[in-house]
Image 1 (cartoon, rainbow, N blue to C red):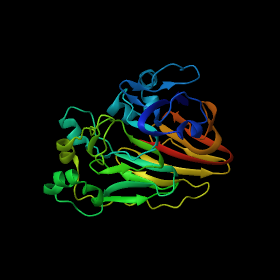
Image 2 (spheres, rainbow, N blue to C red):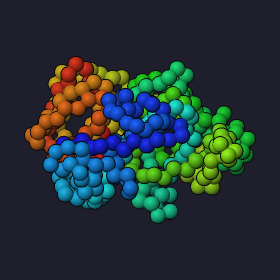
Image 3 (cartoon, one colour):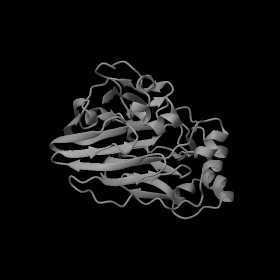
Image 4 (cartoon, rainbow, N blue to C red):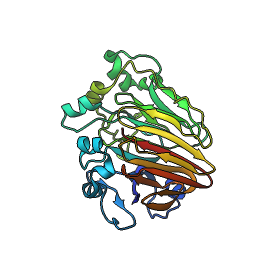
Length: 320
């Protein structure tokens, strides 16, 4: 089991919630993102402690191969970790975006597209997310709607609260609104097309670049299925939030020991501690975790015991 040093990213829209949430100190301000687990080129997270300390995530995979990734995953992805795990703190509205699917991404020389999900950790009063359109949009109207700003009225904006979960398949228009603090699980990809940015201007009076042509190619204009995931959290019982070809994510909330058997998964498992603290034990050892930390468990782990200190809430995700 491994913990990694997070990569904190200061952004023009970032806030000040991530460091306190994680219980860490930083001189950075406006931290919009914490990359918890990343194999993205140039942004590889590094093992924090233990005999593998100092190894990047790809180097760790190269060392342990299928015993870390799972046989099918290692055959498919090699040393490229297929998921990117983030915390996102939006002090201001993020742009309206869309991500390509695998077919479009590969058309333009990228290994894959980006399907993702959000789990709301905190939300200021009135905070919103946009997920898809309210009604189908005629592609012929797209550029006019963007130019006039009417595209905002077409988006499915919803007020959010902690625990709300949203699945965002590739090709769905989406946006994180001011006051939203979320955990994000996604395919490893940096392919993002901005289709609208509220006509905001920088200090020089310039609007940010839009990717109008690529965004139009990527967008599913008939996608109106942007409702939150319908689930009920159950104490000491795993609850599935998302199951798709790219990842499966479950919510674990517990106040006493919870046993997890991963032998049939043939996949690594990522645990994102969203609240509380616990001890994680396997036949390979044990480690303590707390709110804001992320731990990677190898596919070779036969069983894992989660022992809470009080109450703990965890996002459990894997591929397979």
